[in-house]
Image (tube, rainbow, N blue to C red):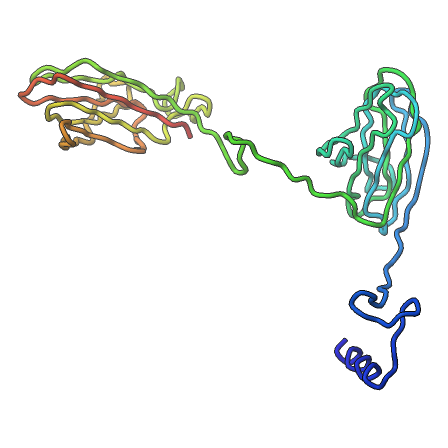
Length: 295
C-alpha cells in the first residue's frame, strides 16, 4: 500500500492528474472503492392455515433472512426455523421484529395489521434451509415474502435498564429480618432469641432446600443503655441435648448506648439462637434485631 501511495504521489508531482468523474482526485472527490454488490434470494408464498410454510435453500454466502407479510389479513403466529441437515430437522432462530425493534422467536400478526409486519434474523453458520411456518392459526391468509441477503443486517438490540433490581449479573437472594426483642432487660437477666432453623424444614444430613435455606449469612445487632454480653449459640438437635455457646461478645460503648454486633456471620450449626446477658445494671432500653440471608 505504501508503494502504491508513493507511486501516485510521484505521478501527481509530475503534473499527471488523477480524475474521477472529470475532476481531480481530492478529499472531497476521492477515488471510488470497489465493493461487492449485495446478493439476494427471494421466495414468496401464502400462509392461510395451521402448518402452512414457506421454505428456501440457503448457501454460505447468505448472512441474513427477513420474513414479512406482504398482504392479506392473517391472524396467526409465524415462526422462523433453520435446518443444518438439508431440511430433515429444524430449530428456531431468534431474530428482531422490525416494527418494535425487539428480540423475538416468532412473528405474531393480527388481521388487517398483518401487512408490513416483519422479522429479521441472522442465519446460523452451516444452515442449509430456512422455513417460515404457521404454528398458531386463528383466521385469514397473507402473502409471505422471504428474502435472503449476503449482507449482515441484524443490529444488536440496545436495552435500557430501569432504576430497579433489573441489572445485568444481578441475582436476588432471599432474606428474612426479625425484631427479636424491644423489652427492657432487667438486672442480671438474660434474653434468649427464638431458635432459627437455618436450613429450612429438612431432615438432618439432607441437602439444603434452596427455597428455605438461610444458612449463607447471619447478622445480629443488640443495643442497650447498660453493658451486656452477646452470646451466640448453636445446636444440631434444635437445642435438645446439644446446645453450645460458641461465641461471646462484650458490648462496646457507643455514645450513650452499648452495642454488640455480628455482621455476615456464617454459622456451622443447623439451629441457631443468641442471648443477651445483662450485668448488675437494669436496662431502660433493649433492642435486638437479626437478619438471615439465603444461599
